[in-house]
Each structure stands twice: as C-alpha cells, then as structure tokens.
Length: 506
Image (cartoon, rainbow, N blue to C red; front, side, top):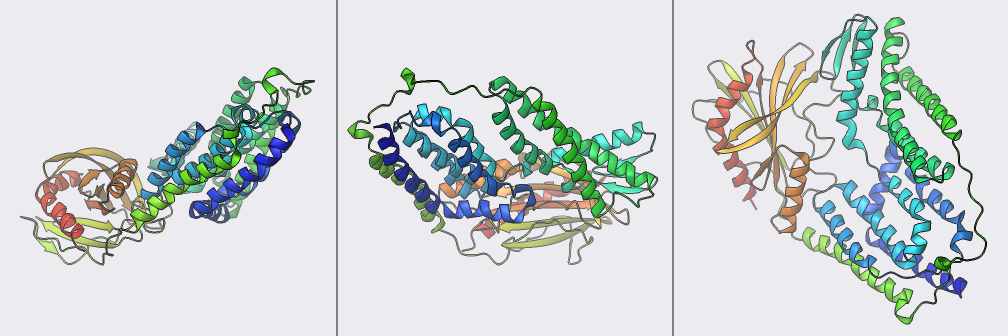
C-alpha cells in the first residue's frame, strides 16, 4: 500500500515541479546564467544533484512513510508567489530566485507531507545554495579586510597611509577591491561546510557550531591572506604576490585553511545510528483519503503558482512609452549655467533611459549636477544595482577615499543623502552627494528605493526613477559641502520640477 502510494505521488510531484519551473523559467534561467558567468556561483550546478543524492541515501528511512498531502502549505505558497512578484517588480533578482526556490520546496512538502519533510529538511534547505547571493556583503567585507590589513602592517612596523580602501606603504600602494572581499571563500566554505556538518554530525548543536566555524574561519583567513600578500609583495620588492600570483597564493592559502578546518572537525565526527528495526507508530503507513488525491493537489498548486506570472505579465503590459531625454533644467538664481563640464569624473550608472550633466558657477566656484533617469526597468536596465556606483573600485583615475551620510533640506523636505570624497590620480578632490527620486519619493537607501519602485509598479504608477548627484571641488578650506548646501537650497525646486516634468512626458 505504501509503495503504491509513493508510485502514485512521485510522478505527479515531478510533473508539478516541472510546471513551476516552466512558469518561472526566466527566473530559473537567470540563476543558471549567473552560474555560467560567475566563478563564485559555479557550485550552483552541483546543488540539485547533491540534494537528490542526499534524499536517495536515506530512501530506506523514507520507504515506510506514506506521503500525506498537506493542503495547508498552499496558503504559504500564495505568500511566496507574492514575494516573487515583488522581486520582479523591483528587479531584485535574488529575491525572485529565493521565492522560486521556496515554491519548489513548498510543493514537495505539500505533496509528501510534514512527516516525510522532517526527514529531508536539510536536503530541501540545501537547495537554497543554488541561489546566487552574498554580493550585498561586499562593502562590509572589503572594509573589514582593509582594517585588518592596515592594522597588521602597522603592528609589523610598516608605516601606512590610508584613505578609504586605498593605502600606501614605503614599497608601493595597494587597494582592497571586490576580489579581496573574500566573498568567494565564504560562500564556498558555507556550502561545503553545511554539507560536511550534516553528513558528519547527528546533533543539531554540533552541526550549528561547525556551520558557525565555516562562516568565521574564511573571514579571518581572508584577512590573513590579504595581509600576507601585501607583506610578500613588500618584502620581495613587489616581485611576488602581484598579478596572477596574487590569486594563486590566495586560493592556495584558502585551500590549506579549509582543509585544516575539515580535518579538525572530523575529530568530533558522530557515526550514524543504525536504522531502527520495525515501524514506529509515527512511521506507520497511512491510507490516503479520497480528498488527498495528488491530482487535486497538483491542480491547486499549478493554479496558485500561475497567478503571479500572469499578474506580472499584466503589469508589464502597461509600460509607459520609452524616454529619450530629460526635460531641460531652468535657471538657478545666482548660479549662472556653464556649457563646460568642469571635471572628467562621471558616476558609473549604466543604461539610463536619459541622463544629463549640468554645470553651475558662482563667485569663482564650480558645481555640477548629474541626473540619470530610468523608465521601464528590467534586469539589464535598472537604477539600483551593485554595478551602479559613484566610482568603481578598479577605476584607474578616481578613488573613493571616504563616505558617510548627512541630512539636507531638499525643497522644504529633510532627507538623508550619501556623501563621498573622491581623489583623482593628480590629487584633485571632489565632494559628492547622492540620493534617489522614485515617482516623487526621495531616499538614499538602495532597499527603500527598490521598495518604492515595487510599490509604485504594483499600484500601476510605473517605475519612473532617477539618481541625483551633486558634486564640487573640495576646496582648500574643505568648504565644498557648505557650497552645496547653499546651492541645493536654491536649486531643489528646479531639480524636482525637471523630474516631475520628465515623468509627464509620454
């Protein structure tokens, strides 16, 4: 009876999972595309085979259990689908991908029931490692790496001059870039470490401790790696640990550290208990009732999961006409406009629907405004993304040597803006302010801007958005921000008017 139940449920479950993947194929293919492009997430190709193997290895424990369809899971599936829709509307790919993965897991639980799901909790949770995520931690990891490296150099007796993520020692200059963050090491360690903990330990406490170790060790190892690379370069006169050597030494050091971690972790290995003889009361097969037919559950699941792609298609169908240029910016009292851009620096914001630079001068001081406007955003044309930054870490001319936030008054509204200090190769310094405008809402937060975009699209108002940059030379007395304060008090109404008028262009 139990074997017959499994034979009736599994094909229907497989067909349902396949249908979900077809309905959400663009999200699934986006995940695969990242696996192909990024070495950090290539392990995604192995996640599904490992999950299947993990379930297969405990098939003898699952065989006595009868699948018990659970219709209550469908309510959670509805909420997960809505989260996917929000991710699509806000063009937050990682949110959509987590939601899709959760939908697949929920479908399995709905068909097999909670008793079976408890036995395969880890294999199902392991599927989340297929989602390419972790880049949000890059800035913090880079900052920690720079802090430790500079501290280590100073404790080693080497004088260091640091500005932001860039520092100079007597033998040369160094910068902490994305590759130095250690995010690759951390993701690799957590993926393999979680699998090792599951297979090596039986107690939840030991598994949790080892998972924590797998998180902390690569972070500290990456700090040591960065410090040692700088030291090797310094002591060798920059003949070693530069260029390709930099990467080779990094992965070699990481490999040694991680292997050591696994060897030490194996000392507390817990052997698996032999499977219990006979069947317990909780594992006794249950004959499915009529209303527990997997076909009815499959139909309900497919109906629920098809709602959200249809909703997205409906919203996407109401796109506004494309935009080619911003509406012209008018005069700012006391600040004559200039047709010449006073600096070669430009924010690295790509694929805007329209953008424009404005230069103003007053009492011998120059100030610039940059507006980049986005409409009908998608994965390739969106305002808030990790690739859109004030200055790239690998920029050969400009470097960000400081950043913070501050309160300003913009058109009688108090808002927080991001501030940054930039330095060029010829020691020119700029003070930069940045914030977002989303259909009239102002914020400097990437997350809040994404929320505004999703909410605006959900209500049918479109996704018109813009990033606003204000910049000026720092000045000998460091009075650049005072100058921008004076300017924004006069220019804010016109800047907002430009964006409002552009939004009305159809």
